Length: 326
Ligand SMILES: NC(=O)c1ccc[n+]([C@@H]2O[C@H](COP(=O)([O-])OP(=O)(O)OC[C@H]3O[C@@H](n4cnc5c(N)ncnc54)[C@H](OP(=O)(O)O)[C@@H]3O)[C@@H](O)[C@H]2O)c1
Image 1: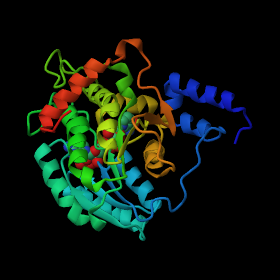
Image 2 (image 1 turned 180 degrees about the horizontal axis):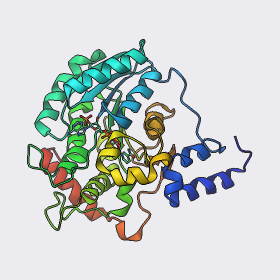
Image 3 (image 1 turned 135 degrees about the vertical axis):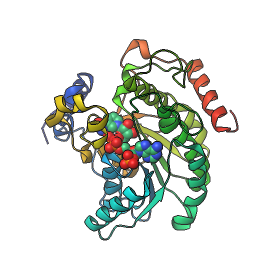
């Protein structure tokens, strides 16, 4: 640990964040872990007796999150859209962690009917029908505008509609639990498009669609936290920085080639997700986190969102999911 006064350590942490590349790459955690402001690791058995559900657990950050949670003692349900791939990943992870209690479940999070089926079946699969930790990690960046089985633009379906619906349906099983949305620093470049949530206007850009849906996740945090607080459920978002995962290789090959050796590994990209699930006391809800510290939801004036826009987006989500108001 570097013997620095806390204000200096805070300054370094913020500087890393605002200069983007140094903070998002492997440099970020390498420096931050040496600062006196780096929060403590959770206790080794912090999640003993807890059940965690992780979507997108067959690859990259989701797999690293499942492993991190299992290492802290959680029973982990790995949610995969491809059952065959899920079985291979489960066998491999089980081989590495023989004492872990791991299960596999299938769900396409972008398909609202499949989310409903999954939410109905899951309680049968887990101890006492309870879920303590729900990690919405599944993500994708389709190269062309794609629609989900219900006709929603895919990134909004996968990153917003599916996760909100799954949480709503599991709410009675989640009492006292934590929900974590894995978002992206890419959302800093986009403002909320409550006027065009399905990306029907203008030419489609994969990175813009992806970043808009991730912006929507962050903008909904206060609404969701307030809505779910009645069930004792807190909601948190984290962005992983830039991590070397199959998703980045596939969706951003040029970025991957340019940044390759500087990218974090998946474990480091998943660190804050695992930490948010396990640290005590429960972190304040409705906040965006990166490298175990709260981060601002906006860094550019042009992306700032008013209450009205946020409320309009929430109304749209509620209507698509047929949820009771407000
Ligand atoms: N890596 C980064 O630098 C980075 C940066 C910012 C944000 N993120 C976010 O971190 C999360 C994980 O990304 P990653 O980099 O680990 O990507 P990844 O390697 O592509 O993993 C994505 C996971 O999501 C699953 N998935 C995709 N579509 C799905 C669907 N419709 N239903 C259920 N599961 C689905 C994938 O399943 P298959 O295995 O079947 O494909 C895979 O398990 C994503 O939300 C991503 O947006 C990553």
